[in-house]
View (cartoon, one colour):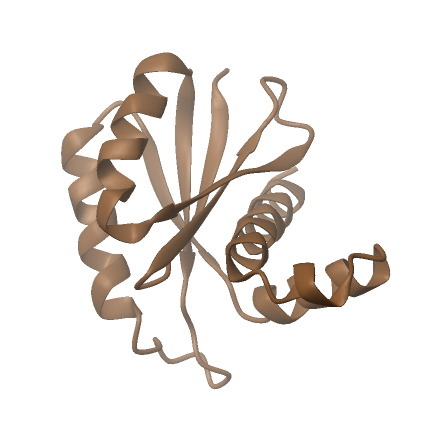
Length: 137
């Protein structure tokens, strides 16, 4: 059983999280520039056994797709074509940025570090992954 990798897509930066090999714990892995995301993923997949890719589905409060969906859907299609051996699934990412900020605040991270958008993206990806894994237990 391979790892699960989660993607919190952003037009500038993308947060990435990954599970442990037993799929018990989600951990923030990296924040990469979105324009280099697919090259980064290719390197990672060459080195690690990943069987599932969870892509955060950007959704508005009413359930309609948000503006970012027009980038996320084609990304998922490219990943499915490039990695037919991996399952690519969507998972609702509503409130992940809010939860990431709250998590940072509750953990005692300083004000300047909380402004680090790359850290917020990585924590958001971790929240997406942890929620996905709990939902699928």
